[in-house]
Length: 549
Image (tube, rainbow, N blue to C red; front, side, top):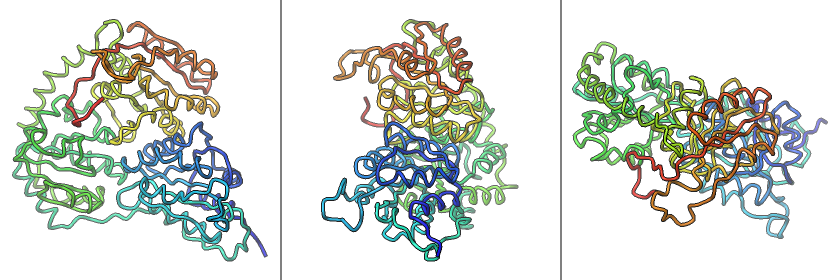
């Protein structure tokens, strides 16, 4: 009789699904699970805080369109995953989290680190469950992955009680699912009648715009959407996470005319994104009160929550965009909107030079926009940019373009601080062939700065650029409580971890420092450039919310 342990069932299941990397911190009772998994050729990246494991898994998923995986030890170790999982939930990212837990046969007896981890995880995941039988481990892992990518993606959690994973059973009793089907997404088409209604609205429109988000990327619909945008000549604006569907130096990318386009549009086609504060809930005064609204989303509940929609198409973004392309071939032509594009082009041509002038300032202390300009001009066209912070996040969003999908990563709508280093680690593990540049606020860097140690230990080369304005957010009036943090020498901190590190105080020295960092990471270690920036420079943009720091 051949036997197998629960730990081996976990590792074998992950291997058969196609997992190649995971993020974790060691601890009971999962150490043997981790060993069994890594013995099967799956790389484990041990981080310095469990929230970073979940965050790295989120960025990994974003960069690859493949569920990220993380592990936490029992009790506090698993609970530490929750901040990262909550961010993934609000951001709609498929992460599969495993937590070791106290043995089932001792429930209620006060065993070590006993707590109901599934109950804790339910509010911060789209699905949470516990394995009670060793033979069902592959079955439940298969279900966890399928839940993470089904419909609107999101994080899931699977509890691994110690007596279940350490148990040894007859391998003939194991329930083995067909793992070849685990990651096959359901792709429902849209109702043809609603496709026709949408086309009629587009035919009547004179000033249409497209708003798109991450749902396009999870569906793999970027090629179809890009073709639709170019063929039909409709301007497109994306969420911060959905950027790159259309390269942002394309003639139809009118980034500086975004506000005018939203206010003047008469028809909005929304593809794969929520109508939250990012788009002003598509309400006046942000969006024209007379505009017709077409929504495409795989989540019927998301559409049903719309207070404003004229045509609601429930379906997979890739399939629905194919339907629209086929049905509109001879009906919706770019010539219909030539005047509209001309109007936005005029605004773009007027505002772009003004924006460039503002970024070229040589003022001291260094303006964050000048820092963004130097990074913009330095980063590879197909480099992955991660941004985390307050002011620098807003400045970066305004000033640094993206040219490819899945090449721009930030915290998303939950606004979690401290995601930068874990995100950069996850992105580089996912895309080792890509240059990864992280722009970080100094306050948020402090939350997970020890992930620089993770990158150093695991030879994960990336360039970290700190906007060092001495505290949390800009403070031109000097009246924000707890704002000041001081001007920390993060360059020396980086050196102490065996990384390249240097500090910059003058704008003309930024680019040479970046070039030296680029050379330095050839040894496999990260590099950090600590740039002293103006503590009074406040990002000026459309306010997303009524509350701000």
